[in-house]
Amino acid sequence: MPTVNAYAAPSASEDLIPTTIERRDVGPRDVLIEIKYAGICHSDIHTVRGDWGPQQYPLAPGHEIAGIVTEVGSEVTRHKVGDRVGVGCMVNSCKECANCLAGEEQYCLKGMVGTYGAVDRDGTITQGGYSTHVVVVEDFVVTIPEGIGLDVAAPLLCAGITTFSPLQRWGAGPGKKVAVVGLGGLGHMAVKLAHAMGAEVTVLSQSLKKQEDGLRLGADQYYATSDAGTFEALAGSFDLIINTVSASIDISSYLQLLSLDGTLVNVGAPAEPLPVNAFALIGGRRSFAGSMIGGIRETQEMLDFCAEHGLGAEIEVIPAEKINEAYERVLASDVRYRFVIDTATL
Image 1 (cartoon, helix red, strand yellow):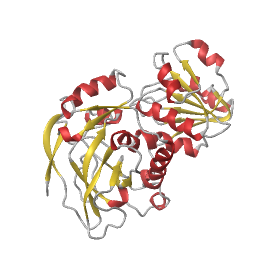
Image 2 (cartoon, rainbow, N blue to C red):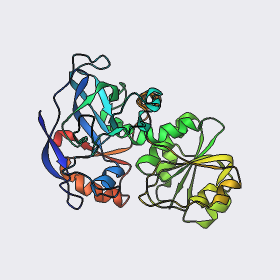
Image 3 (cartoon, helix red, strand yellow):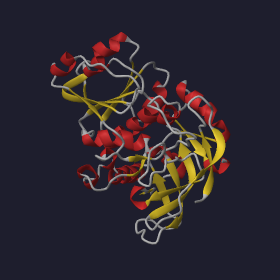
Image 4 (spheres, rainbow, N blue to C red):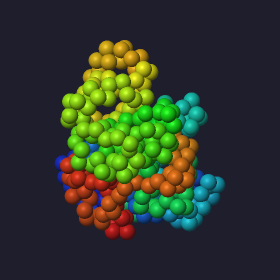
C-alpha cells in the first residue's frame, strides 16, 4: 500500500500539518490520479474541526480534486493514462439502490462514501485531496474537458455541481428570476451558472462590498440584506432562491421574497437548525428545499456546460504551507472566491 505526501489535521483543535497517508493499491477498476490542484471548501473546515460530528484523525480533507491519470486497473474502460480528470465529494456508493441506479449516487440509500472522513466499502477511512495522489474507482472519476484549466476546474467538483444541480432541477433559464444568497465560494459559481443558463440573476449579500464583483460575474442586480428596505422592495420577486451561506439566517424573511410557487433551496449547511414560519410557506404556496451536490452523470454535464460557456471558479492559488492561514481567511470571508492548493508544494 503506497504512502503519499499530504496535509492532515491531527485533531479537531490543531492546525493541519505535513504528513504521509496510505493509499490502496490500484485494483482492477481503480484509477490512480496525480493530484495537481485541490480546492479548499468551507465544509473541509467544518469537518476537520468536528462541527458536524466526531472524526477519526489524522484526517486529510479535500473534495475538489483535479489531476492527471497516471495508472489504471486492468478492467478500467472510462479513463486512460494522461487523461485530465476530477474527483468531487464522493468516491463510492452501493451502486445497487434505486437512487444509485437513477444516477443520484449522492443520495445512495445505504450512504454514499465521502471523499474524506468516511468508511469506504473495504472498511478503511477515506482521505481527501490535500495530497499528491488518490486512488478512486473509475465510476466516481469525471473528465475535465479541454478548455478549462485544472486550477479553476478543481472547485467545480463541489462548488460548481452544488449550485448547478438545483439550478437545473428548478429550471433556471430565460424568463426566470433567480436570487443567490451570499457571494462566496458557492455563491459566485451560482451567479456564473445562472447567468449562463439565461436567468435574470440577483445577489443578496450582507453588504454591498462585493457588488462590483457580483455584477462582473453576471448578476443583473445586487442588494444588501442588512438594509431592511431590501426585503420590502423585493417581496414576491423570485422564482428561485439559492441559499449558499453556511450560517443561520432568517429563512422566513427570505421565503417572502418568492413569487407564487417559488422555491428556496438550501445548499449551505449550517450546523444549527433553520426555523421556518409555516405561514411564510402557506401564503404563496412556496417550497423550502435542500440539495446536495449532484450525481456523477450530472457532474460531468456541469463540467461540459462550464467548458462550453468558458466558466471556471475565481481562485487564489496557494502553497500547502498557507492552508491554515487560508482556513482563517475563509472564516473571515477574506477570499475571492476559492482557495486552491498547488499540490506540487506538498
